[in-house]
Image 1 (cartoon, rainbow, N blue to C red):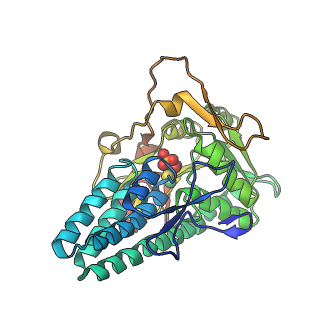
Image 2 (image 1 turned 120 degrees about the vertical axis):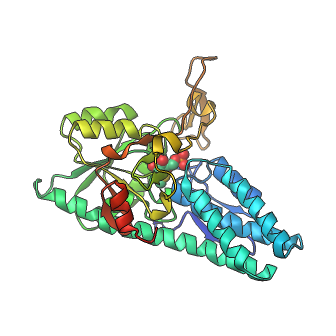
Image 3 (image 1 turned 45 degrees about the vertical axis):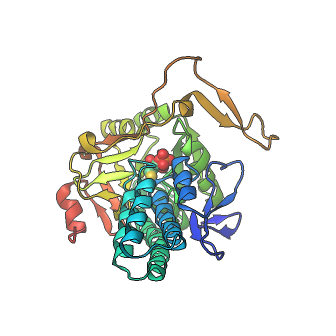
Length: 374
Ligand code: MRU
């Protein structure tokens, strides 16, 4: 996507050897900065500390981190089984950074299988580099296709509207291009509809505690010229009751092959409100976010718990002439804080899944019909 007219992805191989570029998402929307990663350690830190975040982006950065891991194994003079064991250990280190988003483990496992099959150390490094690029390219292409399929939902809603009345879509957190390599999942249909001339307006949940909606989704939509309004997280139900939401689209960090959806905390409440108000609730995801092993999302998906300070301390500009962000305490000092990062929306509340292969019901049979090879 374009940033001030320049095309960017969220992660890329730099021309310099053993170097990966990322957008430092912690700085957005107040500053646009890129960073270089040169070690597995760097990649793990970038994921853990949320320099990068969002399922697809985490997966792609992990794939690039594994390329850096392969370079480190070669530099240590390892080959054969010793290389493979050290490489797998570095993969474990990456996987431990964030437990809920399934793309992370998917990308690391994919690298381990490919690198283990390759011969000499040099070949292993080359395979890891090529696979990092492939994971990024696939992610971008799958999200582009999600946009094309999802656009049909907007076209379907047009018939009940006068020409200039926008379709109001509500989204939660950031499942935009920043959360992937390009295009985004939940935002891809929005961009595709907007680019096709369909009038769209987006209600953007601010998404406490880290405000990915207010900071990232709002910035992205603004960069692309999509009309949008940021709302406090508690507003969606009221808007839905008053006919101000036509459609909800969220992303997901992990969706079971039975259709249960883990996504940013608060998504479940939006799904309940949408259900109560007969508003379609769609989840957009590339197949790399489907967990093909877990059946019961509520019981079996691990929910990451993050530092309480993310809730009790907020950061931002004290006024718009400031260059640096400041932090302020927003919770009564000493009060305990809980910070569950995700929740699970049961499949029965999900109208459909928008994937790179088309839209299907959030049921085991519909998902497997779309992905028969699984
Ligand atoms: O904790 P984060 O920012 O990595 O959370 C992930 C998300 O961005 C959201 O849950 C998003 O809606 C799904 S990831 C595409």
